[in-house]
Image (cartoon, rainbow over all chains, first blue to last red; front, side):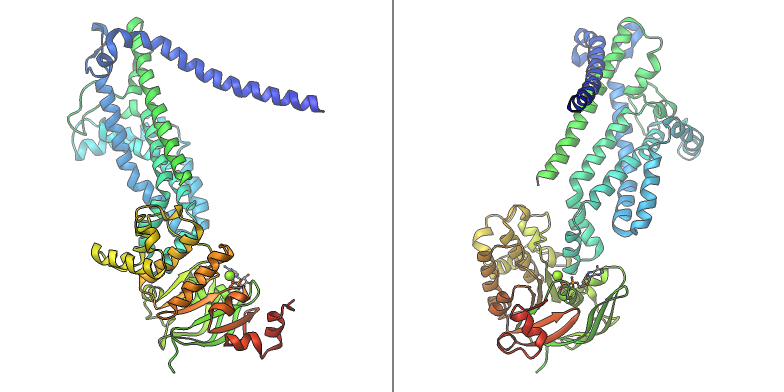
Length: 283
Length: 251
Ligand SMILES: Nc1ncnc2c1ncn2[C@@H]1O[C@H](COP(=O)(O)OP(=O)(O)O)[C@@H](O)[C@H]1O
Ligand SMILES: [Mg+2]
Protein backbone atom coordinates (compact mmCIF):
# COMPACT_ATOMS: atom_id res chain seq x y z
CA UNK A 1 0.00 0.00 0.00
CA UNK A 2 2.64 2.42 1.16
CA UNK A 3 4.99 1.62 -1.70
CA UNK A 4 2.21 2.17 -4.22
CA UNK A 5 1.58 5.63 -2.82
CA UNK A 6 5.27 6.37 -3.03
CA UNK A 7 5.25 5.28 -6.64
CA UNK A 8 2.37 7.61 -7.49
CA UNK A 9 4.08 10.44 -5.68
CA UNK A 10 7.28 9.79 -7.58
CA UNK A 11 5.42 9.71 -10.88
CA UNK A 12 3.79 13.05 -10.18
CA UNK A 13 7.14 14.53 -9.23
CA UNK A 14 8.63 13.41 -12.55
CA UNK A 15 5.74 14.95 -14.47
CA UNK A 16 6.02 18.21 -12.54
CA UNK A 17 9.76 18.34 -13.10
CA UNK A 18 9.43 17.61 -16.79
CA UNK A 19 7.16 20.64 -17.21
CA UNK A 20 9.84 22.83 -15.74
CA UNK A 21 12.53 21.11 -17.81
CA UNK A 22 10.56 21.66 -21.02
CA UNK A 23 10.19 25.37 -20.19
CA UNK A 24 13.89 25.64 -19.46
CA UNK A 25 14.76 23.87 -22.69
CA UNK A 26 12.62 26.29 -24.70
CA UNK A 27 14.25 29.25 -22.97
CA UNK A 28 17.71 27.78 -23.59
CA UNK A 29 16.92 27.07 -27.21
CA UNK A 30 15.74 30.62 -27.85
CA UNK A 31 18.79 32.01 -26.07
CA UNK A 32 21.17 29.78 -28.02
CA UNK A 33 19.63 30.74 -31.37
CA UNK A 34 19.21 34.45 -30.64
CA UNK A 35 22.06 35.48 -28.38
CA UNK A 36 24.90 35.35 -30.97
CA UNK A 37 23.40 38.05 -33.17
CA UNK A 38 22.71 40.30 -30.19
CA UNK A 39 26.33 39.90 -29.12
CA UNK A 40 27.51 40.67 -32.64
CA UNK A 41 25.52 43.86 -33.27
CA UNK A 42 25.47 44.82 -29.58
CA UNK A 43 22.44 45.25 -27.34
CA UNK A 44 22.32 48.90 -28.28
CA UNK A 45 22.58 48.22 -31.99
CA UNK A 46 19.80 45.68 -31.75
CA UNK A 47 17.34 47.47 -29.48
CA UNK A 48 18.05 51.13 -30.23
CA UNK A 49 18.32 51.05 -34.00
CA UNK A 50 15.33 51.62 -36.24
CA UNK A 51 16.89 50.00 -39.30
CA UNK A 52 15.41 46.61 -40.02
CA UNK A 53 16.46 45.34 -43.41
CA UNK A 54 17.59 41.74 -43.12
CA UNK A 55 18.76 41.67 -46.76
CA UNK A 56 21.27 44.44 -46.00
CA UNK A 57 22.20 42.82 -42.71
CA UNK A 58 20.56 45.51 -40.60
CA UNK A 59 18.78 44.21 -37.57
CA UNK A 60 17.42 47.07 -35.43
CA UNK A 61 14.08 46.40 -33.77
CA UNK A 62 13.32 49.81 -32.24
CA UNK A 63 10.46 50.41 -34.67
CA UNK A 64 8.84 47.17 -33.54
CA UNK A 65 9.40 47.98 -29.88
CA UNK A 66 7.75 51.35 -30.42
CA UNK A 67 4.89 49.73 -32.33
CA UNK A 68 4.33 47.22 -29.55
CA UNK A 69 4.45 49.96 -26.91
CA UNK A 70 1.93 52.13 -28.73
CA UNK A 71 -0.53 49.35 -29.34
CA UNK A 72 -0.21 48.05 -25.78
CA UNK A 73 -0.65 51.48 -24.25
CA UNK A 74 -3.63 52.10 -26.54
CA UNK A 75 -5.15 48.77 -25.60
CA UNK A 76 -4.86 49.55 -21.88
CA UNK A 77 -6.37 52.98 -22.46
CA UNK A 78 -9.31 51.44 -24.31
CA UNK A 79 -9.72 48.59 -21.88
CA UNK A 80 -9.31 50.25 -18.51
CA UNK A 81 -12.39 52.49 -18.39
CA UNK A 82 -14.55 49.66 -19.72
CA UNK A 83 -13.22 46.90 -17.52
CA UNK A 84 -13.13 49.01 -14.36
CA UNK A 85 -16.69 50.28 -14.82
CA UNK A 86 -17.82 46.78 -15.59
CA UNK A 87 -16.05 45.35 -12.54
CA UNK A 88 -17.35 48.09 -10.24
CA UNK A 89 -20.88 47.61 -11.49
CA UNK A 90 -20.80 43.83 -11.18
CA UNK A 91 -19.09 43.81 -7.81
CA UNK A 92 -20.77 46.75 -6.08
CA UNK A 93 -24.16 47.33 -7.71
CA UNK A 94 -25.46 44.17 -9.34
CA UNK A 95 -27.18 41.35 -7.48
CA UNK A 96 -25.18 38.17 -6.88
CA UNK A 97 -27.37 36.45 -9.46
CA UNK A 98 -26.57 38.94 -12.21
CA UNK A 99 -22.91 38.80 -11.26
CA UNK A 100 -22.96 35.00 -11.27
CA UNK A 101 -24.36 35.04 -14.82
CA UNK A 102 -22.37 37.87 -16.36
CA UNK A 103 -18.91 37.12 -14.97
CA UNK A 104 -18.60 33.71 -16.69
CA UNK A 105 -19.89 35.27 -19.91
CA UNK A 106 -17.20 37.96 -19.75
CA UNK A 107 -14.60 35.30 -19.06
CA UNK A 108 -15.90 33.41 -22.08
CA UNK A 109 -14.75 36.36 -24.22
CA UNK A 110 -11.20 35.26 -23.45
CA UNK A 111 -11.90 31.95 -25.15
CA UNK A 112 -12.75 33.42 -28.56
CA UNK A 113 -9.85 32.64 -30.93
CA UNK A 114 -7.79 35.73 -31.64
CA UNK A 115 -8.21 35.28 -35.40
CA UNK A 116 -11.90 36.03 -34.89
CA UNK A 117 -11.05 39.30 -33.15
CA UNK A 118 -8.70 40.17 -36.00
CA UNK A 119 -11.44 39.38 -38.48
CA UNK A 120 -13.91 41.61 -36.64
CA UNK A 121 -11.35 44.40 -36.75
CA UNK A 122 -11.00 44.03 -40.50
CA UNK A 123 -14.68 43.96 -41.37
CA UNK A 124 -16.01 46.40 -38.79
CA UNK A 125 -13.24 48.79 -37.77
CA UNK A 126 -11.35 49.18 -41.08
CA UNK A 127 -14.30 50.75 -42.93
CA UNK A 128 -15.31 52.85 -39.93
CA UNK A 129 -11.84 54.30 -39.49
CA UNK A 130 -11.32 54.75 -43.24
CA UNK A 131 -14.59 56.63 -43.61
CA UNK A 132 -14.55 58.76 -40.49
CA UNK A 133 -10.88 59.30 -39.59
CA UNK A 134 -8.97 58.56 -42.79
CA UNK A 135 -5.98 56.34 -43.45
CA UNK A 136 -6.12 52.88 -44.91
CA UNK A 137 -7.64 51.11 -41.94
CA UNK A 138 -4.82 49.01 -40.48
CA UNK A 139 -3.33 51.19 -37.76
CA UNK A 140 -2.32 51.63 -34.14
CA UNK A 141 -5.86 52.74 -33.42
CA UNK A 142 -7.50 49.66 -34.90
CA UNK A 143 -5.12 47.32 -33.13
CA UNK A 144 -5.53 49.20 -29.83
CA UNK A 145 -9.30 48.96 -29.92
CA UNK A 146 -9.35 45.28 -30.78
CA UNK A 147 -6.58 44.38 -28.31
CA UNK A 148 -8.34 46.50 -25.69
CA UNK A 149 -11.43 44.35 -26.15
CA UNK A 150 -9.34 41.19 -26.09
CA UNK A 151 -7.81 41.99 -22.71
CA UNK A 152 -11.12 43.13 -21.21
CA UNK A 153 -11.95 39.72 -19.72
CA UNK A 154 -8.56 39.38 -18.01
CA UNK A 155 -8.66 42.77 -16.33
CA UNK A 156 -12.39 42.73 -15.58
CA UNK A 157 -12.36 39.29 -14.05
CA UNK A 158 -9.34 39.97 -11.83
CA UNK A 159 -10.76 43.38 -10.85
CA UNK A 160 -14.08 41.80 -9.84
CA UNK A 161 -12.25 39.23 -7.73
CA UNK A 162 -10.16 41.94 -6.04
CA UNK A 163 -13.22 44.09 -5.31
CA UNK A 164 -15.11 41.11 -3.97
CA UNK A 165 -12.18 40.24 -1.72
CA UNK A 166 -12.53 43.59 0.10
CA UNK A 167 -14.06 42.76 3.48
CA UNK A 168 -17.74 43.59 3.84
CA UNK A 169 -16.94 45.34 7.13
CA UNK A 170 -15.22 48.17 5.20
CA UNK A 171 -18.37 48.81 3.19
CA UNK A 172 -20.54 48.77 6.30
CA UNK A 173 -18.07 50.89 8.21
CA UNK A 174 -18.01 53.54 5.52
CA UNK A 175 -21.76 53.61 4.91
CA UNK A 176 -22.48 53.69 8.65
CA UNK A 177 -20.50 56.95 8.83
CA UNK A 178 -22.87 58.51 6.32
CA UNK A 179 -20.75 58.07 3.20
CA UNK A 180 -22.57 57.55 -0.09
CA UNK A 181 -22.00 54.39 -2.07
CA UNK A 182 -19.82 56.26 -4.53
CA UNK A 183 -17.71 57.77 -1.80
CA UNK A 184 -17.36 54.33 -0.29
CA UNK A 185 -16.19 52.86 -3.59
CA UNK A 186 -13.84 55.70 -4.41
CA UNK A 187 -12.33 56.29 -0.99
CA UNK A 188 -12.28 52.83 0.58
CA UNK A 189 -13.07 49.95 -1.77
CA UNK A 190 -10.86 50.94 -4.71
CA UNK A 191 -7.82 51.76 -2.53
CA UNK A 192 -8.30 48.45 -0.73
CA UNK A 193 -8.52 46.55 -4.02
CA UNK A 194 -5.74 48.55 -5.67
CA UNK A 195 -3.01 45.94 -5.59
CA UNK A 196 -5.22 43.24 -7.07
CA UNK A 197 -6.48 45.51 -9.81
CA UNK A 198 -2.93 46.60 -10.65
CA UNK A 199 -1.71 43.05 -11.04
CA UNK A 200 -4.72 42.42 -13.29
CA UNK A 201 -3.70 45.35 -15.45
CA UNK A 202 -0.16 44.05 -15.69
CA UNK A 203 -1.38 40.62 -16.74
CA UNK A 204 -3.49 42.43 -19.34
CA UNK A 205 -0.39 44.24 -20.58
CA UNK A 206 1.33 40.87 -20.83
CA UNK A 207 -1.47 39.52 -22.98
CA UNK A 208 -1.40 42.59 -25.22
CA UNK A 209 2.36 42.41 -25.70
CA UNK A 210 2.17 38.71 -26.55
CA UNK A 211 -0.83 38.77 -28.87
CA UNK A 212 0.13 37.93 -32.46
CA UNK A 213 -2.57 36.76 -34.84
CA UNK A 214 -5.10 39.55 -34.40
CA UNK A 215 -2.35 42.14 -34.48
CA UNK A 216 -0.94 40.87 -37.78
CA UNK A 217 -4.39 41.16 -39.31
CA UNK A 218 -5.12 44.72 -38.20
CA UNK A 219 -1.95 46.63 -37.33
CA UNK A 220 -0.63 46.99 -40.89
CA UNK A 221 2.85 45.56 -40.12
CA UNK A 222 4.93 48.37 -41.68
CA UNK A 223 8.34 48.77 -40.10
CA UNK A 224 8.10 52.53 -39.53
CA UNK A 225 8.16 54.92 -36.62
CA UNK A 226 4.50 55.97 -36.44
CA UNK A 227 3.62 59.66 -36.57
CA UNK A 228 -0.06 59.33 -35.84
CA UNK A 229 -2.50 56.84 -34.40
CA UNK A 230 -3.68 56.10 -37.93
CA UNK A 231 -0.25 54.89 -39.07
CA UNK A 232 0.35 51.17 -39.47
CA UNK A 233 2.96 49.58 -37.22
CA UNK A 234 4.56 46.20 -36.72
CA UNK A 235 4.85 44.58 -33.30
CA UNK A 236 7.62 42.33 -32.03
CA UNK A 237 5.41 39.26 -32.17
CA UNK A 238 4.20 40.07 -35.67
CA UNK A 239 7.81 40.48 -36.81
CA UNK A 240 8.65 36.94 -35.78
CA UNK A 241 5.48 35.40 -37.17
CA UNK A 242 5.69 37.18 -40.51
CA UNK A 243 9.32 36.45 -41.33
CA UNK A 244 10.17 33.21 -39.62
CA UNK A 245 9.11 30.86 -42.39
CA UNK A 246 11.63 32.21 -44.93
CA UNK A 247 14.38 33.56 -42.67
CA UNK A 248 17.83 31.97 -42.65
CA UNK A 249 21.19 32.67 -41.08
CA UNK A 250 21.56 36.00 -39.28
CA UNK A 251 18.02 36.94 -40.14
CA UNK A 252 16.71 33.84 -38.42
CA UNK A 253 18.90 34.56 -35.40
CA UNK A 254 17.61 38.12 -35.26
CA UNK A 255 14.06 36.80 -35.08
CA UNK A 256 15.01 34.54 -32.20
CA UNK A 257 16.66 37.53 -30.58
CA UNK A 258 13.35 39.38 -30.93
CA UNK A 259 11.87 36.43 -29.06
CA UNK A 260 14.40 36.94 -26.27
CA UNK A 261 13.32 40.55 -25.89
CA UNK A 262 9.67 39.46 -25.68
CA UNK A 263 10.51 36.70 -23.24
CA UNK A 264 12.33 39.09 -20.92
CA UNK A 265 9.54 41.65 -21.14
CA UNK A 266 6.93 39.08 -20.16
CA UNK A 267 9.10 37.77 -17.31
CA UNK A 268 9.55 41.30 -15.96
CA UNK A 269 5.81 41.96 -16.19
CA UNK A 270 5.07 38.74 -14.31
CA UNK A 271 7.58 39.57 -11.61
CA UNK A 272 5.98 43.00 -11.19
CA UNK A 273 2.52 41.45 -10.99
CA UNK A 274 3.67 38.95 -8.38
CA UNK A 275 5.48 41.56 -6.32
CA UNK A 276 2.42 43.79 -6.29
CA UNK A 277 0.17 40.91 -5.34
CA UNK A 278 2.49 39.83 -2.53
CA UNK A 279 2.82 43.41 -1.24
CA UNK A 280 -0.97 43.49 -1.03
CA UNK A 281 -1.10 40.36 1.09
CA UNK A 282 1.56 41.48 3.54
CA UNK A 283 -0.26 44.68 4.29
CA UNK B 1 -37.89 65.55 30.12
CA UNK B 2 -37.20 65.29 26.43
CA UNK B 3 -35.59 62.10 25.30
CA UNK B 4 -32.71 61.87 22.85
CA UNK B 5 -33.87 58.59 21.38
CA UNK B 6 -37.30 56.97 21.57
CA UNK B 7 -38.28 53.61 20.18
CA UNK B 8 -42.05 53.40 19.72
CA UNK B 9 -43.66 50.01 19.07
CA UNK B 10 -40.59 49.06 17.06
CA UNK B 11 -40.62 45.76 15.21
CA UNK B 12 -37.95 44.56 12.80
CA UNK B 13 -38.24 41.65 10.41
CA UNK B 14 -35.68 39.71 8.39
CA UNK B 15 -37.99 38.35 5.71
CA UNK B 16 -40.57 36.44 7.72
CA UNK B 17 -38.43 36.30 10.81
CA UNK B 18 -39.60 38.64 13.54
CA UNK B 19 -36.30 39.78 15.05
CA UNK B 20 -37.43 42.69 17.25
CA UNK B 21 -40.87 42.52 18.82
CA UNK B 22 -42.71 45.68 19.65
CA UNK B 23 -39.95 47.48 21.50
CA UNK B 24 -40.65 50.60 23.52
CA UNK B 25 -37.75 52.45 25.07
CA UNK B 26 -36.72 55.99 25.89
CA UNK B 27 -33.13 57.11 26.17
CA UNK B 28 -32.11 60.42 27.72
CA UNK B 29 -29.32 62.61 26.38
CA UNK B 30 -25.81 62.09 27.75
CA UNK B 31 -26.44 58.74 29.34
CA UNK B 32 -24.96 55.33 28.74
CA UNK B 33 -27.46 52.58 28.13
CA UNK B 34 -26.33 48.98 28.05
CA UNK B 35 -28.21 46.32 26.13
CA UNK B 36 -27.69 42.86 27.53
CA UNK B 37 -29.10 39.50 26.64
CA UNK B 38 -28.10 36.17 25.17
CA UNK B 39 -26.66 35.90 21.69
CA UNK B 40 -29.26 36.17 18.93
CA UNK B 41 -31.79 38.15 21.00
CA UNK B 42 -31.65 41.16 18.67
CA UNK B 43 -29.19 43.56 20.30
CA UNK B 44 -27.18 44.23 17.15
CA UNK B 45 -30.35 44.52 15.13
CA UNK B 46 -31.56 47.25 17.46
CA UNK B 47 -28.36 49.31 17.13
CA UNK B 48 -28.18 48.80 13.40
CA UNK B 49 -31.77 49.91 13.03
CA UNK B 50 -30.99 53.17 14.83
CA UNK B 51 -28.10 53.86 12.41
CA UNK B 52 -30.27 52.66 9.48
CA UNK B 53 -27.39 50.48 8.32
CA UNK B 54 -29.55 47.40 8.74
CA UNK B 55 -31.74 48.25 5.78
CA UNK B 56 -28.81 47.41 3.48
CA UNK B 57 -29.65 43.79 4.18
CA UNK B 58 -32.16 42.50 1.66
CA UNK B 59 -35.58 41.71 3.06
CA UNK B 60 -35.46 43.78 6.25
CA UNK B 61 -38.57 45.66 7.19
CA UNK B 62 -39.52 47.75 10.19
CA UNK B 63 -42.77 48.71 11.86
CA UNK B 64 -43.21 51.40 14.46
CA UNK B 65 -41.06 54.45 14.92
CA UNK B 66 -37.67 55.60 16.07
CA UNK B 67 -37.49 59.22 17.13
CA UNK B 68 -34.20 61.05 17.53
CA UNK B 69 -34.59 64.57 18.90
CA UNK B 70 -38.34 64.06 18.42
CA UNK B 71 -37.93 63.43 14.69
CA UNK B 72 -38.96 60.17 13.07
CA UNK B 73 -35.80 58.85 11.46
CA UNK B 74 -37.74 56.51 9.17
CA UNK B 75 -39.82 59.35 7.76
CA UNK B 76 -39.43 59.32 3.95
CA UNK B 77 -37.96 62.83 4.06
CA UNK B 78 -35.18 61.88 6.47
CA UNK B 79 -31.67 62.53 5.17
CA UNK B 80 -30.16 59.12 5.85
CA UNK B 81 -26.58 60.35 5.47
CA UNK B 82 -27.13 63.08 8.09
CA UNK B 83 -28.81 60.57 10.38
CA UNK B 84 -25.85 58.20 10.16
CA UNK B 85 -23.59 61.13 10.92
CA UNK B 86 -25.61 61.96 14.00
CA UNK B 87 -25.73 58.39 15.26
CA UNK B 88 -22.31 56.91 14.50
CA UNK B 89 -21.56 53.26 14.92
CA UNK B 90 -18.65 51.24 16.30
CA UNK B 91 -18.66 47.60 15.33
CA UNK B 92 -17.75 44.42 17.14
CA UNK B 93 -14.47 43.97 15.32
CA UNK B 94 -12.43 47.09 14.65
CA UNK B 95 -13.03 47.99 11.01
CA UNK B 96 -10.41 50.64 10.35
CA UNK B 97 -10.03 51.19 6.64
CA UNK B 98 -6.74 50.16 4.99
CA UNK B 99 -5.73 53.82 4.93
CA UNK B 100 -3.48 55.97 7.08
CA UNK B 101 -4.42 56.91 10.65
CA UNK B 102 -5.07 60.45 9.46
CA UNK B 103 -7.26 59.39 6.54
CA UNK B 104 -9.26 57.10 8.81
CA UNK B 105 -10.11 59.84 11.29
CA UNK B 106 -10.82 62.45 8.66
CA UNK B 107 -12.94 60.03 6.66
CA UNK B 108 -16.22 61.12 8.22
CA UNK B 109 -15.61 64.88 7.92
CA UNK B 110 -14.35 64.44 4.36
CA UNK B 111 -17.38 62.51 3.14
CA UNK B 112 -19.54 65.18 4.71
CA UNK B 113 -17.78 67.89 2.75
CA UNK B 114 -15.04 69.32 4.97
CA UNK B 115 -11.98 69.91 2.81
CA UNK B 116 -9.79 72.48 4.56
CA UNK B 117 -6.60 70.96 5.88
CA UNK B 118 -6.49 73.21 8.94
CA UNK B 119 -10.03 72.27 9.90
CA UNK B 120 -9.33 68.57 9.40
CA UNK B 121 -6.11 68.81 11.45
CA UNK B 122 -8.05 70.36 14.29
CA UNK B 123 -10.69 67.64 14.18
CA UNK B 124 -8.01 64.96 14.20
CA UNK B 125 -6.28 66.38 17.23
CA UNK B 126 -9.53 66.85 19.11
CA UNK B 127 -10.86 63.37 18.50
CA UNK B 128 -7.51 61.72 19.17
CA UNK B 129 -7.19 63.59 22.45
CA UNK B 130 -10.71 62.60 23.41
CA UNK B 131 -9.86 58.94 22.86
CA UNK B 132 -6.46 59.25 24.58
CA UNK B 133 -4.63 58.41 21.40
CA UNK B 134 -3.00 61.75 20.65
CA UNK B 135 0.31 61.21 22.41
CA UNK B 136 0.81 57.77 20.92
CA UNK B 137 -0.34 58.56 17.42
CA UNK B 138 0.58 62.16 16.72
CA UNK B 139 3.86 61.04 15.12
CA UNK B 140 2.19 58.18 13.27
CA UNK B 141 -0.44 59.98 11.23
CA UNK B 142 0.81 58.50 7.97
CA UNK B 143 1.08 54.92 9.21
CA UNK B 144 -1.48 52.41 8.05
CA UNK B 145 -4.23 52.09 10.64
CA UNK B 146 -4.08 48.34 10.17
CA UNK B 147 -0.58 48.26 11.64
CA UNK B 148 -1.91 49.32 15.06
CA UNK B 149 -2.85 46.91 17.85
CA UNK B 150 -6.49 45.82 18.07
CA UNK B 151 -7.12 48.07 21.05
CA UNK B 152 -5.77 51.11 19.24
CA UNK B 153 -7.73 50.17 16.15
CA UNK B 154 -10.94 50.01 18.16
CA UNK B 155 -10.14 53.33 19.84
CA UNK B 156 -9.44 54.74 16.41
CA UNK B 157 -12.88 53.56 15.32
CA UNK B 158 -14.36 55.45 18.27
CA UNK B 159 -12.25 58.49 17.35
CA UNK B 160 -13.56 58.19 13.82
CA UNK B 161 -17.12 58.51 15.09
CA UNK B 162 -16.22 61.47 17.31
CA UNK B 163 -14.54 63.18 14.36
CA UNK B 164 -17.74 62.71 12.42
CA UNK B 165 -19.46 65.06 14.84
CA UNK B 166 -21.89 62.44 16.10
CA UNK B 167 -24.14 63.11 19.06
CA UNK B 168 -24.99 59.47 19.59
CA UNK B 169 -22.47 56.64 19.69
CA UNK B 170 -23.73 53.12 19.08
CA UNK B 171 -21.25 50.45 20.15
CA UNK B 172 -21.84 46.82 19.27
CA UNK B 173 -19.81 44.67 21.67
CA UNK B 174 -16.81 46.96 21.16
CA UNK B 175 -14.57 45.00 23.52
CA UNK B 176 -15.23 41.46 22.41
CA UNK B 177 -11.95 41.33 20.47
CA UNK B 178 -9.93 42.86 23.33
CA UNK B 179 -8.27 41.53 26.46
CA UNK B 180 -9.59 42.42 29.96
CA UNK B 181 -7.13 45.23 30.65
CA UNK B 182 -7.69 47.05 27.39
CA UNK B 183 -11.40 46.46 27.89
CA UNK B 184 -11.22 48.39 31.17
CA UNK B 185 -9.46 51.25 29.40
CA UNK B 186 -12.17 51.45 26.75
CA UNK B 187 -14.82 51.42 29.47
CA UNK B 188 -13.10 54.30 31.25
CA UNK B 189 -13.09 56.14 27.97
CA UNK B 190 -16.81 55.59 27.49
CA UNK B 191 -17.62 56.94 30.94
CA UNK B 192 -15.59 60.03 30.07
CA UNK B 193 -17.36 60.43 26.74
CA UNK B 194 -20.75 60.27 28.41
CA UNK B 195 -20.30 63.92 29.40
CA UNK B 196 -20.87 64.92 25.81
CA UNK B 197 -22.47 62.00 24.05
CA UNK B 198 -25.46 59.72 24.28
CA UNK B 199 -24.14 56.20 24.23
CA UNK B 200 -25.76 52.83 23.68
CA UNK B 201 -23.50 49.85 24.20
CA UNK B 202 -24.34 46.27 23.42
CA UNK B 203 -22.56 43.77 25.57
CA UNK B 204 -23.01 40.24 26.73
CA UNK B 205 -20.67 40.96 29.57
CA UNK B 206 -22.81 41.84 32.57
CA UNK B 207 -19.93 43.19 34.63
CA UNK B 208 -19.27 45.58 31.81
CA UNK B 209 -22.88 46.73 31.76
CA UNK B 210 -22.76 47.19 35.53
CA UNK B 211 -19.49 49.14 35.37
CA UNK B 212 -20.26 51.63 32.64
CA UNK B 213 -23.96 52.17 32.20
CA UNK B 214 -26.64 54.35 33.79
CA UNK B 215 -29.44 52.29 32.32
CA UNK B 216 -29.65 48.69 31.23
CA UNK B 217 -32.09 46.87 29.04
CA UNK B 218 -32.45 43.12 29.08
CA UNK B 219 -33.48 41.55 25.80
CA UNK B 220 -34.66 38.04 25.10
CA UNK B 221 -35.77 36.55 21.79
CA UNK B 222 -36.49 39.90 20.19
CA UNK B 223 -38.31 41.36 23.19
CA UNK B 224 -37.14 44.06 25.52
CA UNK B 225 -38.00 42.29 28.74
CA UNK B 226 -37.08 45.06 31.10
CA UNK B 227 -35.26 48.35 31.13
CA UNK B 228 -34.32 50.35 34.18
CA UNK B 229 -31.50 52.05 36.01
CA UNK B 230 -28.56 49.71 35.95
CA UNK B 231 -28.34 49.42 39.73
CA UNK B 232 -32.00 48.40 39.89
CA UNK B 233 -31.69 45.87 37.07
CA UNK B 234 -28.82 44.19 38.83
CA UNK B 235 -30.13 44.34 42.40
CA UNK B 236 -33.89 44.13 42.11
CA UNK B 237 -35.02 43.01 38.66
CA UNK B 238 -38.77 43.14 38.23
CA UNK B 239 -39.08 40.35 35.71
CA UNK B 240 -38.37 36.71 36.57
CA UNK B 241 -36.55 36.23 33.23
CA UNK B 242 -34.19 39.12 33.95
CA UNK B 243 -33.49 37.76 37.38
CA UNK B 244 -32.70 34.32 35.97
CA UNK B 245 -30.28 35.84 33.49
CA UNK B 246 -28.59 38.11 36.04
CA UNK B 247 -28.13 35.33 38.53
CA UNK B 248 -26.84 33.04 35.82
CA UNK B 249 -29.78 30.67 35.88
CA UNK B 250 -30.60 31.38 32.29
CA UNK B 251 -31.37 28.48 29.97
N1 LIG C 1 -29.03 39.25 7.98
C1 LIG C 1 -29.90 38.49 8.69
N2 LIG C 1 -30.80 37.72 8.04
C2 LIG C 1 -31.66 36.94 8.73
N3 LIG C 1 -31.69 36.86 10.06
C3 LIG C 1 -30.82 37.59 10.77
C4 LIG C 1 -29.88 38.45 10.12
N4 LIG C 1 -29.13 39.06 11.06
C5 LIG C 1 -29.59 38.60 12.25
N5 LIG C 1 -30.61 37.74 12.08
C6 LIG C 1 -31.37 37.06 13.14
O1 LIG C 1 -31.93 38.02 13.97
C7 LIG C 1 -31.79 37.65 15.32
C8 LIG C 1 -31.10 38.74 16.09
O2 LIG C 1 -29.78 38.87 15.63
P1 LIG C 1 -28.77 39.93 16.25
O3 LIG C 1 -29.43 41.24 16.27
O4 LIG C 1 -27.50 39.82 15.51
O5 LIG C 1 -28.60 39.36 17.72
P2 LIG C 1 -27.52 39.70 18.84
O6 LIG C 1 -26.74 40.87 18.39
O7 LIG C 1 -28.31 39.97 20.06
O8 LIG C 1 -26.69 38.47 19.01
C9 LIG C 1 -31.01 36.34 15.35
O9 LIG C 1 -31.93 35.29 15.56
C10 LIG C 1 -30.41 36.25 13.99
O10 LIG C 1 -30.39 34.91 13.56
MG1 LIG D 1 -24.63 40.97 17.95
